[in-house]
View 1 (cartoon, helix red, strand yellow):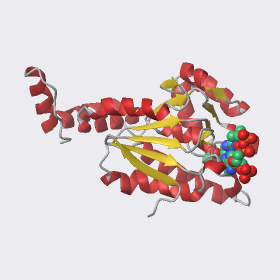
View 2 (cartoon, rainbow, N blue to C red; view 1 turned 180 degrees about the vertical axis):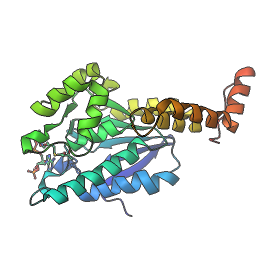
View 3 (cartoon, helix red, strand yellow; view 1 turned 60 degrees about the vertical axis):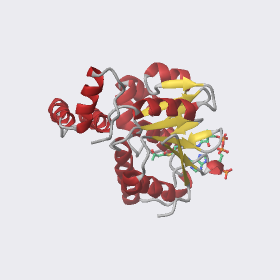
Length: 259
Ligand code: CAA
């Protein structure tokens, strides 16, 4: 698949993915969703980067939501199919075995807020605005917003934001736990890269197992503690663990190979 709405670059071994529908405030139309699906399923498996920064083109928006213009004439069945596809794609991001950080450079609304929440961390510029304004359109969030917002900010505040459609600014998002860091506008990617470079020096298998184990807490089909026991065992069976422990004893920096 050719990328038309995503631009992929590499900096210092980190993948930078930019959604490039700036005139539509990077709204997630079908083509963009299919490209995200391809990126986080097939392409991402072989892309030799240690982590990914996801951002939106321009200074105004990260992503202003699903593309509302594609909603016209949508049936109930079409809506369910669209939401299911969105869930599958956003789960692929959440379960991606390398760290994914959203660099939120402006509006993160509706599907845009949901996309940011599916990433493992969020770095927001001071001008970022978060919200789930779907009730303004007479619909509810369809890409996981009713579930993931609770995970970050708790039920009461989630109920308020989901029902009022209020937007919150970056400092409030930080205070609520929705974002990890707030930085001056324009420095979102640099901060996300700084975090990813730190993670790149750790054992890649351990990082993948952290992602799996933390996600297991939110998966009712899994016992997160049992998952941790197994994942711990899997990490102790790696060459990286031998290298990490040996490097500690030899008082040197570990050189992890990812196996
Ligand atoms: N879909 C399609 N186009 C969008 C869009 C969206 N979600 N958001 C913005 N645009 C387009 C506008 O139509 C406009 O295009 P034209 O120039 O061709 O008219 C362009 O982007 C610029 O937008 P505005 O002129 O509206 O810019 P503004 O500064 O006046 O307002 C804004 C900015 C507050 C973000 C406003 O654009 C807005 O409210 N956007 C919609 C936000 C929204 O409701 N998102 C939720 C979508 S539903 C969803 O996401 C469901 C789900 O969970 C899957």
